[in-house]
Length: 344
Image (cartoon, rainbow, N blue to C red; front, top):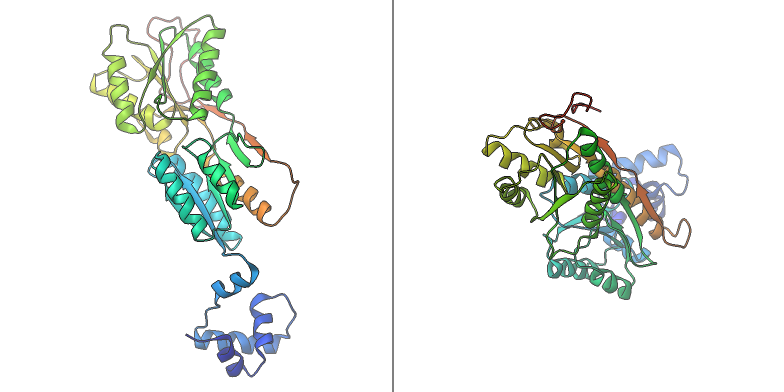
């Protein structure tokens, strides 16, 4: 591989001049700069970033740990992180914990061992990963989760408000037999608890009650819990699912039972993944901008690494938005003054 000395020799300039041209930090006359660039191209010279970063005591690496990169929501969030990191000159390493606390901690250890400058984390292990990162002095930002530590920046959507919007929508359509699919009890997922809590409050504010069912994670788990609900003696006229992936499973279970969505069953999800608008019928959902979440999380981390901004913890709370599509409508027999579902 060509070295910076080789470039300097071919261009007939000093090593310092080559460095000035490549970094752009010191002015070099146009003729000299052109000679250096021609030599770089002819030799196919690649700067030794590892050596430069070691001198600067940085690696140029950022870590991102998500629970499930097969979920389109986390894929969009990861893209927001990666695009922002790339524009800032960083490489982003993506790891998938699969909702496994031990695996998450193993990835935390690996990223620290590889001297990642900072980590964006969507934790599933409570505070264990944060405690370990704090002990090692690694910069960290939480995405899509509420931070319990006063030293950690975070960005998330207002999940409680999003759940309330979903409940309020179903009540406004005239639904009274309402079910809610919440997250599995064994998972410490506070953001999903907030969604359920907000939803139930909206139902309670209308002097109604909703039946809460615990489901697993993913399409199949959503379909399985929906099958149990729909095969029960008291079939609801509406179901709120804690995320769009689960809601898609609900719609599949309804279709297998020859139930019409929304005439027999209204379905509301949460996230507004890209597929939500392309379903048949398109899914009513609470939208959160996953790309913006990732982008904002990375910006917070970069500001910490550059020692910019205030020293106190930064908590960014984004607003959810109810997107009304065709998977929700007034239940059969409800007077016409209740609005039908439509594009909002």
